[in-house]
Length: 419
Image 1 (cartoon, rainbow, N blue to C red):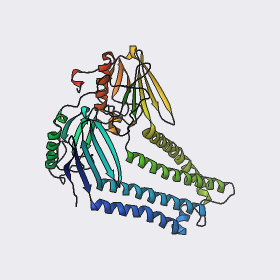
Image 2: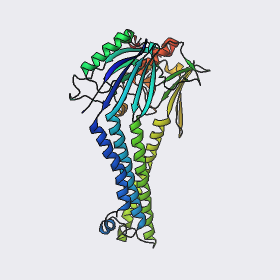
Image 3: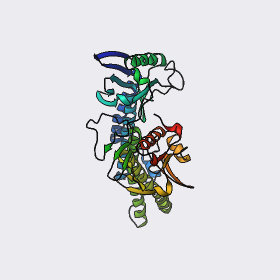
Image 4: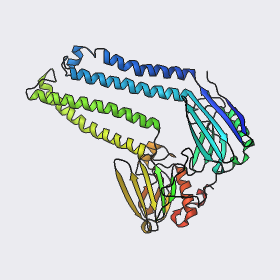
């Protein structure tokens, strides 16, 4: 059975809080089961025999080979431990979520609680607008097609970002909550304003309170010694990073096993102990493992680069009077492109993403790679794309901000100004 609550409680004369909660006993049970799987699975692999002698011998490993048994046990233990842990975390997060929304004179704050840990995000009230019930919220939560993990049934626009709150609230209750919110703060129904052009940080400055969300969304627009500087962190979800980390553990275990079997097979041809029940199969085994390693090693290295980019990567766009410098930076690699403004002209918004970008990120989501993006400079048939990590809305918002600072920097259709 699921329970939700949303009720206002007055904290002070000009501050009010709304509480939301989701509790699913079924999800809690699933989390406990997956957690037990993550603990018991590795224990069974480490303490019990791994397969019979005939099966191991048929796979090309002698029954008495202790290293092979060690590799199988460690690999199986990692699979159960990592897989069960991920499933337990996902089940618990999906079934036990709590939020509180607070509106005071200067800020709109959302506090998230999960397993006793709380995090808070604050938004400047003067840049909040378009408070609404999300268009996909059904009349009842049992309707087909409703995704309870979209972040919430209500939303507001905060500069370039859309912020969701109110998890798993049906439409009638969401509309009731919306009327309470607008009764307390009627100006939140306006269109979200654009940040003033003179509100720019100098390079190196940051907010003292890390909980304060910038109205620009994911990008940070700053003044530098030579002009303007836009910093865009790479876009990725925590679940994706967790999955890639787990996959790399299995990749490393598989790589170690393949190298070991390859070494044993080569040793058998040189008169060492045999890694195969039939020495005539050794050349085929060596050829197969060599080809497999040529594919497996680059794939793992690409995954490492992608993981590092998604976690620590960022794209920095430096705009001066003569050029636009686009730099991709991560702890493992860096690249840079210099775009001549006299040759390519102003910065504009792309009409659509490329096929591969749309296929991997969705039509309106930010490109997760370091090469594409919604922004471009054109010179005839030649185009330079950048702005990786920005959604279409964020890219439009950035162009409006740049236009208000210097109209010659950008080219925006009249309908593109969200202010």
